Amino acid sequence: MEGENEKQTVITLNDESFKHYLIERYGSYAENSSWTRIKNASQDLISHETWVQLYNRAKHDITQKGGSLIGYELVNNILLSHDGINSDWPMNWMWVMRFGRN
Image (cartoon, rainbow, N blue to C red; front, side):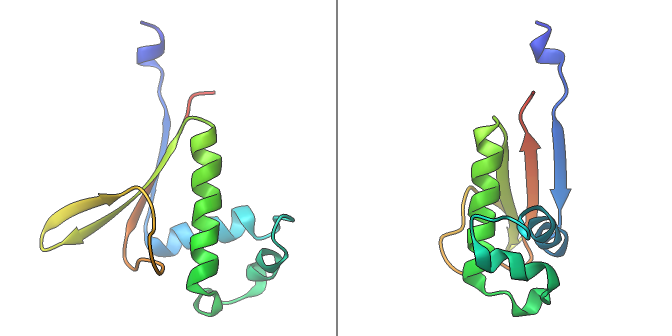
């Protein structure tokens, strides 16, 4: 019963804020040398492929710790949720990061 009352950290970010989070979190990440250059680059110059790679890394890290990363978009006044990115970087999504209990 005690576990049910524990609070989890949830962060919601718009597209621009989420990209900033990805840059700050993974811009110095040694696994991919191309990511080290993104800290000083304009967001407009970062490729869709790199954004998707950064998203995939963040999703992996968050889910490994029991959390989730979900994108939301509004289409024809219907809110759709997305558990992944299957093509180019989606524009104007809202991102929700739920961090697992530690």
